[in-house]
Amino acid sequence: MPVQFEIVTQERLVYSEKVDMVVVDGLDGRLGILPNHSQLLTGLKVSELLVRRGKIEEVFAVSGGVLDVRPDRILVLADTAEHSDEIDLKRADEARKRAEKFLETQWRAAASTAESQLDMMSALRRANVRLRVGRQRRGTLGAMTFEETS
Image (tube, rainbow, N blue to C red; front, side):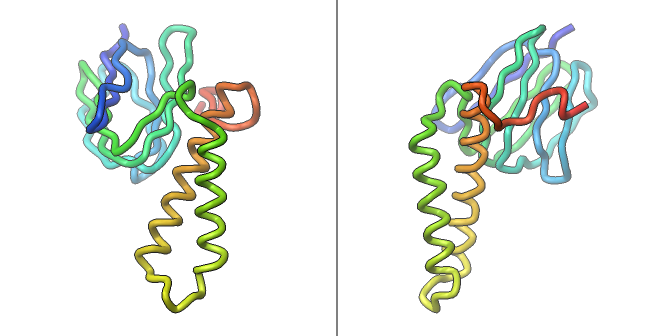
């Protein structure tokens, strides 16, 4: 029996459906959540999030946030979240290139603070996840699949 699943950001309700399974990367590793799962509250990594609804599989890029699991519902409160259909590959690739360039040129520069380096490393991770998820929709190499999570 499917479970209600929602992805919510500060700006919008990204997804709301009854699903059979959710796979996401928590702070302590990859989690596979099924209906009637025991209660769980954990932080999320910048990662791909997979949803299975019958024979339909959907992929999202999520940037941080919290996973709240209860036996009758699963809720992701994400900093940012995008369905694979929403990702602009060109923009994601440009963001990746900007972050890589900053890290290459500023990493050793005295003016570069540890905080700005961490921000760029985080931006690079987000861009790479968005690229994998966006490419998955287009049938190119990229996002994880349910076969990889088994």
